[in-house]
Image (cartoon, rainbow, N blue to C red; front, side, top):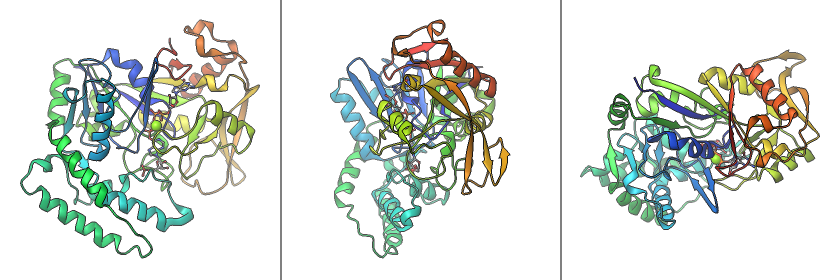
Length: 422
Ligand code: GDP
Ligand code: IMO
Ligand code: MG
């Protein structure tokens, strides 16, 4: 029986999932997104081309590939249509390669307004949402009010759209100081619906299982990261979907025993964009150096990313919940010039040492660090593990020892060629 392999972020998102999917994709015929939506920004770089994908799976550049937007994804037709237009302008064949689940939920213009209103009302306690309407759309999904892709072919679509919009307008009127105007966006949205109508809309759970039965090689592409998971992340500073491996089952309709390899992507350090707990965050020159060298600015919002040392407690937590079978370390090259590296191996909370990720993340968490010697080498041009400096091998082997999972790929630069496969 053919299984589906999975690529997941092990931290707070932006680990480099887009690059990894692009690197792995020659071995797969089908790439499928299973959760999240345009809050994601997945960067792919090859030669002189840079692409940032929000909704479209990162397999799209491979000729002949099938790219599925699964039922667990939430879709903004404006953003999807603009992604398609940009790719087509770059000469990429897109439309014949995208299949969209009829069960995927639609992000309405009023969902975006509700996201903005909710964030504004929270003031300093805001989540730092990407303001793409993700939270309100998943709320309508679980609240059983949502509109789905399959609804756009129904004769009652306009009626259903208006009913949900009116409901949202009622909710928005309760935010006293919040003003909004969706008229322009709504026009683009209706045009986006036409683009969506022209795509192949499918019962993706049936197609996915049929293709797996037929021996197709399939890769599930996660968005966000494990520490942003709605259940196990740093709640409430999380996204609204299951970002863990479990989300593949509900977001594509595959049974747990069909999960194959689980690739866990992590940066050699940590970043987070938006609010919420981040135990190893740096507020000093080292943090700024990571941000500068790593170009740590959001792919979707352009916001500066918060930077800090690698957090082994959080990484082990993510490995545990995902059943990660292979780890992939990204952006080691960003640490090329650091004399000393630190890895958090435990937390001190209320005077006590703990080695797990706690429920109480509001309390002061003091990281306990183990120090490593930096490698002082430009590793970007290295292509074989044997050629890495010993200091980098020591760092990688420590991570393998702590997690019990092999680090099978090491990325040494943003380009698809800058990759060391062991
Ligand atoms: P994703 O959301 O997980 O796909 O990651 P993003 O695309 O949001 O952010 C990762 C950023 O790091 C992108 O700008 C990538 O081009 C870049 N990147 C990926 N791998 C590497 C690497 O090994 N080294 C460096 N320097 N940059 C990388
Ligand atoms: P990729 O797939 C990094 C963060 C937001 C915010 C929180 C909730 O590129 O790794 P939301 O818009 O989902 O309601 O925002 O989650 N966030 C991400 N951070 N990478 C992402 O996606 C993210 N998607 C959401 O910054 O803190
Ligand atoms: Mg990203």
